[in-house]
Image (cartoon, rainbow, N blue to C red; front, side, top):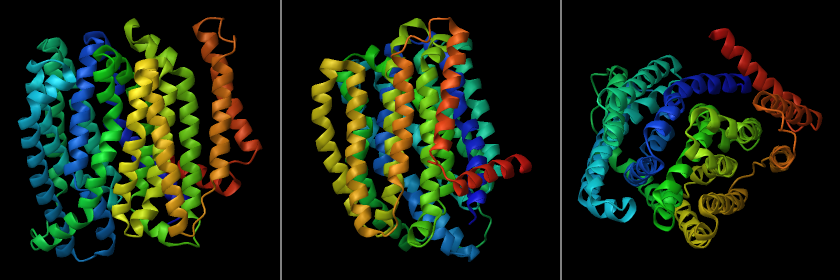
Length: 485
């Protein structure tokens, strides 16, 4: 696959992914004015519980499909793979819902400090069922590079999210419970919109040997998902216990703003990369892996700088004043997301070597490393301490995975250039944060910060941190995307 073609595909998925997730950004002013920080924190804990259960019971079925679909051309066999994946996803997610329902009262008491909120947890768990179904067909779309249908599903989800959220808050005046129900309805409509993509082969139904193979591959990854999911959710869980739900709400807003880097950069990249990554990592003489690595890091660091510089103004414009302190946490969480993205990129080489159990050991080690950090840092530093603990845990995991990857694979990643880009972005941000350049009003501040972003891009090019062939791949992808659009 040509590098410019890869970049073009990433941009296609990027536009679709923005549509899928932009509702959460557009609705930020609505949520932060209609909900208190504590209610916003409740939503975050419920989402973290669902994410943890999805990681545990998801069995990494999408990863199994990406490993098998590209090597299967027979329609009946492909149909068998897909139907078996949907069947397994349905069974696993129904089990997850039953477990959440059983534990809902102690979960509400322990994390939400209110037994009456148990029903919110149960209602929200149905998102797992609908998302589990639609994720299989979305995986098939990505494997087929069918960005057109992906766009249609994304538009449907965007409209539904905005419409149901506004109806819940302003028509029914249902508050927190209205948002919980609206999120379930959005997932249901998103799942329904993927049904027409179901393959129409008349042969090839559920194959239990295929289901078994999915479980054999995915179960070790899901077991790794237990400590990994706990690490990913621990910041919110520990904040709810050692801090307050108001602190959690502020942290959640910072996390939501930081997640735009995932929406705009990493998700589009991974959606284009997922179908190619195992082939690319198996070719030790190829250049696609180093090129993809540099382009990913360049875009991540660029957007990290933009988000970090402008988060204060974004929160001032779109959120209530009670959320203003979230701006101090945004740069730390966004940097954590960059380190995590690099960790996922490197982890593919471990999975390609069949070392799925290694991922469990690594995740467990990270959990043992990061839990004491939360216990020490949150009481003293609050929301910043939670973000710093997550960042240090991500750095620890990346270092371990890169060490193992270097022993398993001959491909050398250009880490020096990636670290230099990150250091340059951090230098620009520190200079902006601790200087007195921004005393001339809102628009002057925006102008000066925009100039700092241009300085960053100029220095990147001057130092050749993104070389000519990589720049050509990126620009060629942009040109191809715009031409086809």
